[in-house]
Length: 121
Image: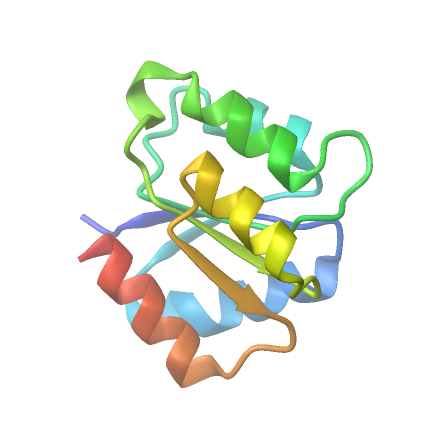
């Protein structure tokens, strides 16, 4: 069965790039435009990895991570922040929340796939 990834980003272009990068590698990629939609999509979906932007309307990445970590089925599910943010304090805040990785946009496809593969392996 294909590993299921949920990409949560308010940019349709980024979601399309993630999908284009991962689907040929055998991943099923679900999409959401913000954290609140991501919570809705993840309900009953059995997600293996979350790829989340930090800055989004409605519910940002940090709020999403706090909320999803409260869901019993997702406490240990890996999360990658895929964002333009690169400040040390934001990275530390992400790490404190249990985020597994931090990738700065724009991303290099081969490295991105390697990180995803390692976390879903």
